[in-house]
Each structure stands twice: as structure tokens, then as C-alpha cells.
Image (cartoon, rainbow, N blue to C red):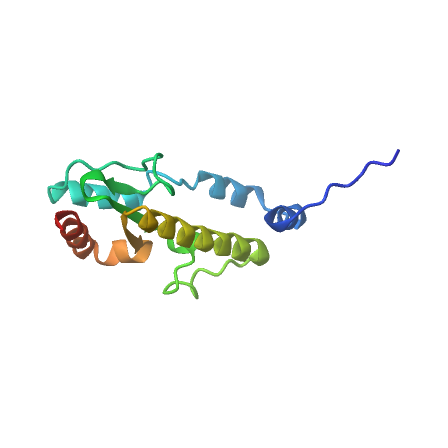
Length: 152
């Protein structure tokens, strides 16, 4: 009997055709999804501004918000510009290799982000989304926005 080939769909099909340099693979594996430098920077600034009682990456909520303030029912997400497809940074962050794979992955991330946001809002949560470039450029203003959202 001949060995039957399995059918591959979506990203798995793209993944089968890619050859990734070991250095690139190692770098990508080192990227974290939680406790990123941006999350830490935002949380430290929120703590310094006096915000207490928040949870980080609460797994009980859909999408595991980076910061969740239960008493205000507020979810804050910090999206990495590359991973979530920032419109402002799009020209600078186009992948040079394996473009089809990365474009499909980023599109899937954006779709998931929109679904998570709509589900949280449907459940009565307020959602704030900030981009990596925003956190770097205007951290104090973001902290003020979060504090205002928790007060109201």
C-alpha cells in the first residue's frame, strides 16, 4: 500500500514550503507573548501612577488582556506592531523572507484581535488597545487614559 499524503491547509501548507535559517528560528522562538518589555513598562508606569488591583494576562478572560482592572471591567491590550500589523508601521515592518507565511499569520492575528475585542465588549467590558509605537511615544498620555477609564 502506498503511503497516503496528508492534506495541509492554511498556515500549515505554507509552513511545509518554508526553509527558515536556524538563527531566524531561534530568534522567533525567543519572542514572548507575555511579560514583554512593553507590558512591563506600561504596568510599571500604571503602578507608579497609583493604579492598584489590576491583574496581568488573566486567563479567565478571552484574549488574556495584558492588564485587566476588575473593578472597572477594563481590559488593556498592548499590541506589538509587527505581530499585529500596525497600520502606522506597516511599511517599515514588511518581512523580507517568507512573506506569504507572515502576511497570513498577521492577517489571522488581526482577525482574532477584532473577534476578541467584540466578544469582550459584548460581555460588558471596556477595551483599550495600544500599539507598541504608541507606548514608546506617549506612555504618560496612555497612563492618564487608563486612569481616566478606571475612574469612570
